[in-house]
Image 1 (cartoon, one colour):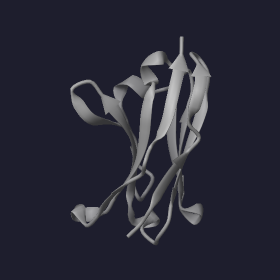
Image 2 (tube, one colour):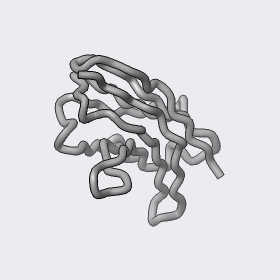
Image 3 (spheres, helix red, strand yellow):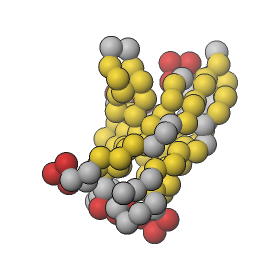
Image 4 (tube, one colour):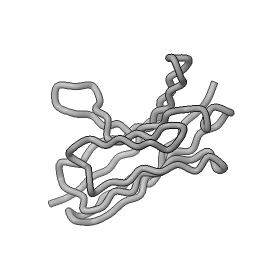
Length: 117
């Protein structure tokens, strides 16, 4: 078992920045593909950004050039730097840890991000 704990959410004006963190307990972090997700219309959650075990990153088109995902395996922590935030970025941001071949799939409880116009 592993636990994921998100932090760093809050209220910010449009154009502002926030940095989210996801800390993982257990021993799965370095072996996991890590990702950030948020709710989306018509979907339960949509991928915002992901980072593989080797550091390969993937971003939703809506956040490319504004958000940056990173990971620190020594600290068992993943980050999401969010710049130039927009009101449509508002939502609960969830951290996810996926094992290879579906071995495991863990989610955090989420952190609220609110962007005011």
